[in-house]
Length: 171
Image 1 (cartoon, rainbow, N blue to C red):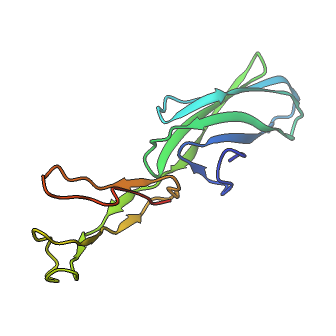
Image 2 (cartoon, rainbow, N blue to C red):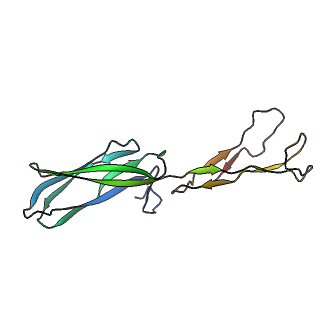
Image 3 (cartoon, one colour):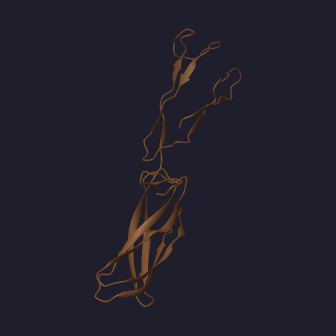
């Protein structure tokens, strides 16, 4: 990933990544004016810069364009979503096609069982009328990306219940 990401080297939700892709000429003749284009039908990524000019790729050699391809990752991608990307290379006469995959990471937040601490009341673990209590709800992340900007909000539509801290920053 690039400077807008978290620097972990993985493809995470909401990031913009830059890819350097090597192409190899396994033939015996130089390939001139080689243009490489990426494409996909996947809704969770946007190919911002999908075409790069590789120029001449000598026979038996490998060429690369450093950070040549730019891809935006959707902020709501499912964790471990696999994107198939088609790579098409052409010299204007012949076209070579191959495929590669990108594994996308996202958090998966899970809510645990609520615990009521009513030790200032009758200490029965149940919120009774007139009591003040501390409610604890554990939260876990089983996904493959951190959720640094997550907020949790607790609300109750019932009359007579006041929530002192409705929103908590989980990041």
